[in-house]
Image (tube, rainbow, N blue to C red; front, side, top):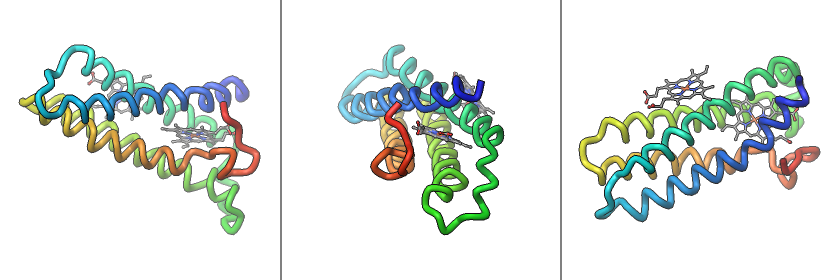
Length: 144
Ligand code: HEM
Ligand code: HEM
């Protein structure tokens, strides 16, 4: 079970990142005079759900793997990554994606909808990129 969740959490990063990048680039390209279509809405919902799902699985892993115990070794960068930096940064990113989706949904003009999408999703994308345990950043981490 733990191994399935671990691989799901690790592999799904690529879908979450792919969707986020697509959503941000698409919103930037259409912000001037593009029309907000059902497809744009679908992309926003899919991105939101995938990021939510990542957070849920992440929390389950955090507790079943006892990552909170690593709080006693904060001077070690790998322990600090898994105990604190990764979870906290990803949680903030997920909140930004939720706010972005919500604001975009409520905005009346299409230009505003795209703007909320690229601002909030863009910021979330940046945070996710800098605090995923990439193999070059966190010894022992995997690519998928
Ligand atoms: C957008 C949200 C998130 C993304 C994209 C993400 C992505 C990742 C990736 C790519 C790894 C590396 C796995 C590997 O080395 O194979 C990882 C590991 C991990 N993540 Fe997340 N994560 C997210 C949110 C969270 C949250 C909110 C938590 C905890 C509350 C969390 C807990 C963990 C744990 C405990 C591991 C280590 C699993 C292990 O290898 O034993 N993640 N995450
Ligand atoms: C403890 C776990 C979760 C929390 C606290 C949470 C929180 C939220 C919040 C606050 C919203 C409102 C956004 C808005 O009104 O625009 C939302 C929407 C949504 N979440 Fe989650 N979520 C969680 C887990 C999940 C999971 C596991 C999935 C799917 C795999 C998911 C998919 C969605 C979807 C599809 C929406 C609605 C998008 C829309 O139609 O506007 N969430 N969530």
